[in-house]
Length: 467
Image (cartoon, rainbow, N blue to C red; front, top):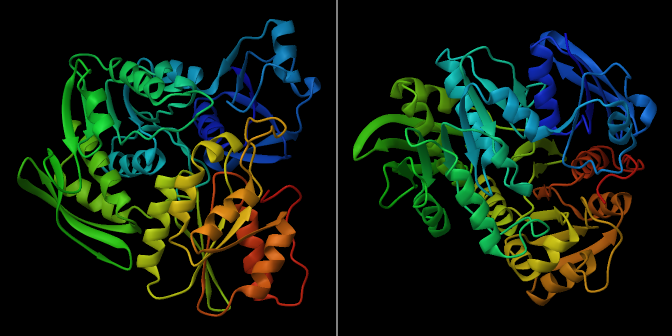
């Protein structure tokens, strides 16, 4: 039985890996910035040590696995090197675990987690018992991962640092390509080159599912050596959504394959973007012999993911929705969907920029996307993988000014308690509050709900949350 130590263990991907490793009988330890536990199959849990210290590493560990947030200066990583303990990144480990399996990888700038989770729902419903590595947990699930003993692995293939090149997919989907991760890809061509290398890892007998209405995806797909199928909500593609309708933001459609109706799908998850995700998941399932009726039933039962237009509840007639959106494309999709879910209601948005570099490069686009809200509260930048601010960087106050220039009521009050206090006094019955961002904003949404439900009490926000 292997003993494996996980550094950065509380991230969604690392928790998915922990579920798979525990299912295989490995003994796990771990550490992260905050103390706690992570779930393991069978209702158990793995204790996670607080902070990163050399003494957290068991000296008899067989392997150390670290997340992308961990640097070479990490004391546990350095201690492992000193002791001669093998060290691998998350994606190196996932690549090794799935190398001998039928690996189905889902790539693209947006929608990866939802599509992997949708595909997992279909393959599980069909009795295929897949292994799953996803970047977000399904609602009600303990982990973003699934330990399955079937021959198929469903993997979220991230382009950050070209991590998807550690995988060996037999089939893959590319959901679309937007310029992002500017710390890895200064120029868009750098990003396109990485995606091209990814699709070229698919063997000639394999399959690529490519979004038809994304020109960059089609350019990349043209360089693949394998067979290519396309998908789009409308237009010219192998997989289409026919007779598309929606109610309160949730879409129903007829799944159409090469002009022929396959099945009916009634999504429980809101958003037109989830129609595309469902099409990609359906195409992967069909390529692996799953019947259309099974595809339709399973996708219609999919209940959604944590932090993907997640309804946190209604507090004092104020609906609160939390979403991971941090790129302008995602912000636009999220706010448009929330408008469909709650038509005619005043929409407040708390937005937390994710990385100062991304905000600086996409300042105008971010402000444009946030115009769909009636009022915007800008939280301090979540400086993931970034050091101290440097001259010329955009910040929360600058984004608020850009929004004000566009006629949007916007302000940047500072830390999380200040944001929650402001919301508690300014939100009115009938409003909708959306918290958007890939950082630690979830606690602000929860604290705002508590402050609204219990007026007059001091808001409780965990230290460091929301900024």
